[in-house]
Image 1 (tube, rainbow, N blue to C red):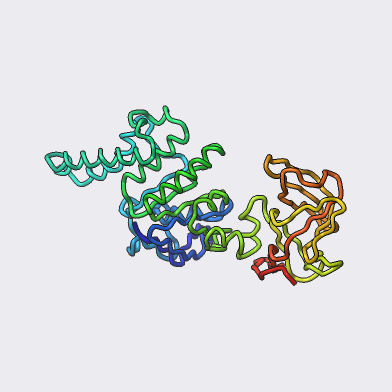
Image 2 (tube, rainbow, N blue to C red; image 1 turned 30 degrees about the vertical axis):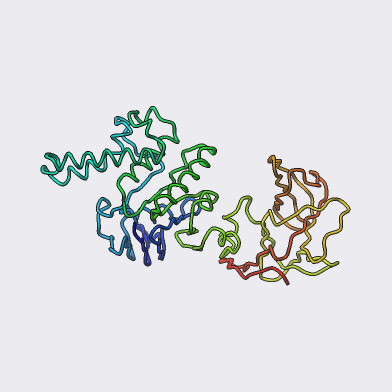
Length: 370
């Protein structure tokens, strides 16, 4: 496997549009790094530049210590898995898996295609196919064609085509987006287990922050072509670099309160003014039972419950905070002690609150404790 290094990499389209703006990133040997962000943030363009499918406007990309800016995709020693599987419909699974290896052998010329050495190489290719099929649990599918496979099986074959080549690095471009929700969860677990077994250097693109949190050793959160934060998933969640990251990573998204917290009646209450924004994740809020006294020193929010989404083992309570626009969310136990249309109070530990600058960057300022 190999290190992938991006130094000041940019993609500029005609008219000066910077789809990717001066990205610096090192994917260590054997690391699983996920590029995540909303549509149009530049994550797929960045991946395609690493693959050689997009021209690099500025900066350098190196794979295993070799600058590859001018190196064709086929010579970069990488394997890419796409969203649409990219399988040959007229070939069996076995032939799909073998295609890249056979083509590489044919390109070496006539001598590589005949004789004892060629027979030995063909046997090695077959052995590699059998090993990969066993690893992915698709050995029973080798003689089928893609049209006879389910979506999950086709995705496993697409991953197998990458694995069988034994590349220096793997690139994944939203490989699970065509699968249904249940299958996506299963494939996430399989990809994670596969990475543990192979120890492969992997750069993975997704717009799904839950997928990113599950798979990545580190996340690269992007917006408008600019990297917002590079950190392990837990750090991105617990210490988001700015308001965008805080609102993008986490389901349901973080609640934001413009203003500050003031001590009143033994609690901390939101107050207008100041140049900060307070952030509270929905799971940091707890509903108070009617008539219950709020614990001293906690943040206290009061408002009207608009609706409650009952989700089986939990409930999302949407409420309108007194004097504020928009809805706030509390992730509560399955049977919260509040009712739709009724007044309710919610508390939070000040240590769970975040402070952000009120300006355009929304940079993290630290804890919201006064």
